[in-house]
Image (tube, rainbow, N blue to C red; front, side, top):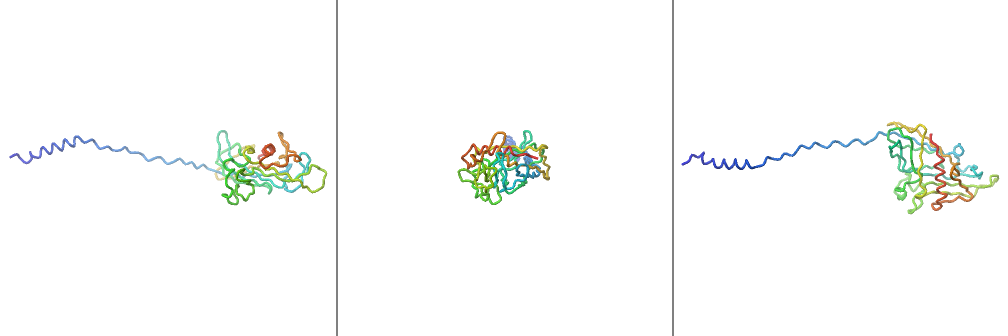
Length: 263
């Protein structure tokens, strides 16, 4: 009778054959964890933008009689305007500053505080008006204090959006008259054809330092709203525009853009 150990040999041989045919276990490669996302939070400072409405170099006084370039007796009784899509520019670099802001210059000097990325910027570029992407927003969605709030009285209707500029007052073509001014002018540019871009270029540029405030002053020569190198507005015949009188609207917005001086 075979020794018991010899009876185990066939089983051992079978086990060795089975294990010899099994593939080596696959060990997945070690995948390093992804690197943390880069820090895209740019250091920022504050631009304090002071906008001064003036008439012939003096602070504008609403409801005060002036003489315009045609010697018409003239008052300014309402002046509001939007700056839209405000960007800081330096060579090929651009930084978004403000999507839209409202300047009620009929109340006097307006000061805005805008956050800007740190750097040395050559200029600001903006549109005079409300950008197309915001112009047809529902004003009821914005609370009091927001530039697009219905409480500002700048919204026209669901179809025509916002008034980009509201410029109103009274006039008399007779410079020697002492009668009360009665005849009104009301020019409200709006809708895409009246949206133009302009630039504000301080002589020394705009240096923004993280955590600090930089001052820029913009003087608005309201007396120049009626005339520029390219356009003249005769209130006797050009005194009303509410979205439809595009030639007069364009005259006004281009004269306004030319009236800005930056310090």
